[in-house]
Image (cartoon, rainbow, N blue to C red; front, side):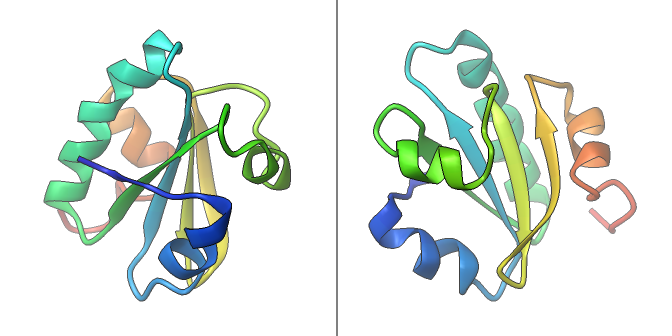
Length: 106
């Protein structure tokens, strides 16, 4: 299960992380957000990547900061910088490809 991050914890949990972090921008009322959550959990279990969640209803500043216009939106951060993004619930392989993880060893 992915940890929730807030504006107060985002820099420490994501931007200063030694490992790549997928930030899942979501909302409780979003059906596709719930559908993609187990896919993200599987990716995290299989790869050297951490998944955290940002509830856009509670953390509107973070959503604005990263240009989140549609959810679910997943942004892969490497070394404190956004490296790739994917929007919408997608099958695991497509999500890995869109986030630039498909070519890495699983």
